[in-house]
Image: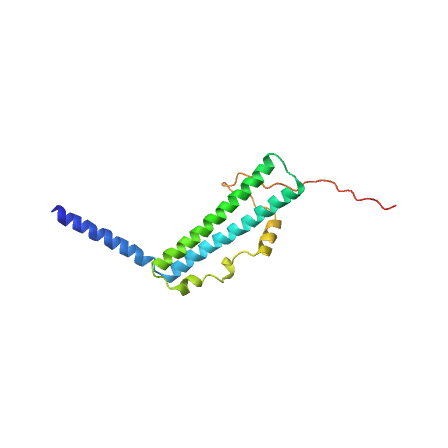
Length: 157
């Protein structure tokens, strides 16, 4: 009786595993998942470019200092980590799709779409100049405001 119960349990587990795997072989589902992963990578690239620009401006001006400087450095590190994580997640998803036999054409179908294209340097620079959106619950840092330093130009005599 124990053998019969064990055999039935093995059959159920195997059927469930094959059923779950068969459900993920849908090309439209893979395209959606890959498009979402590419969109996450594009957003992470924009965030990283914005953080790098802010950090470079801070270094060039030697301002701000203290807690604001630490916040900028923390944002830069977090943006880099998020980009690395997002790229790794995309690569893992592509590898999983390849292992499950998804045709390469399905994987490439989302590469050139406008909604998920990779962020170019000009897009990243443009996004860095846009005003910040309201901070989310996950965001506990503020972007440093530009310094309001008066600039005097020499008068011509």
